[in-house]
Length: 273
Image (cartoon, rainbow, N blue to C red; front, side, top):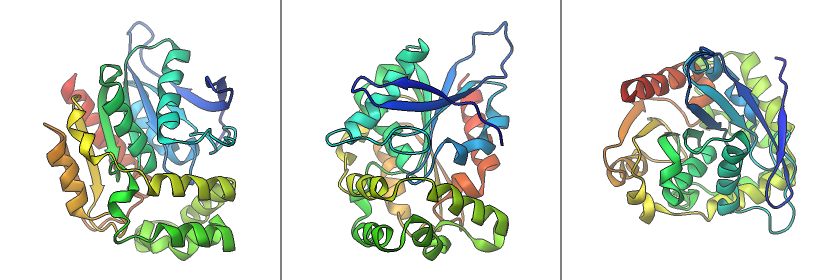
C-alpha cells in the first residue's frame, strides 16, 4: 500500500500529516469528506474506505496528533479542544469553509466535538462506534487498566490480549489481525497512554443537543466498551440523527467491516445530496 502524505503546521507549531484521495469528476465541484481514525491507529486504518467514497467526495484522512506520521505533541499540546482545532486548521489549509466529518471511535469523539463547537463548518457528521467522551463508559470499562497494560507490556501485546473486544475473530483473516497489531505498534506507547487518559476524562454529553447537522451514528451491537444504551442516548440527544446497529459486532467495526461502513456513509450522504 503506497501512500504519499502531505504535511502542514498547526497553529501551535506541531506538524500534522494528512492524505487526499480524490477521484471525483474534474468538472464537478465536489464536497470534502474528512475521515478521522481511532486511537492507536492512523490514516492507514481507513484505507479500505477510500475506494467506495473517493468517486463522490474529495476524501481527506488526517493522522491525529501523535499518531501515524504526525508529530508527537509536547506538554500542553494534547487536549480535545486542540484535536478539534486541528480539523478546522486542516480545512483552512485546504481552503475549504465547510466539510463532511466522519470519525471512528476516538476520531468520532473529535468529529462530534467539532460539530458542537463550530456547527456552521460541519455539513454532516458520521460517528462510528463513538460516544461523546469515554468518561461515559468508565463505569464498565477500566481505562486505567488499559494505560497500565500499554506501559507494562506495550501497545501490541495489550491489543493482542484484548483482541476479542475488538473483532469477532471468526469473521476476519488472521493476516488482518497481524497487520492491525503491526500498525498499532508503530505509534509511541507513551503518547497513547496520554491519549487514552485524555479521552477517558472527556464527557460533553450535555452538549450533544447543539449538533444541528444531519448525523449518522453507526454502532456495534456487541461492543464490550460502550453499551447500546450509551449509543441510543446519542441518537436521542442529536435531533434527527439516524442510528444503524451492526448486530453482534465488536468495537472496531471500521476495521473489520470497512466496506459496509463506507457504503452506509455513502448511502447517507447521497440521500442528503
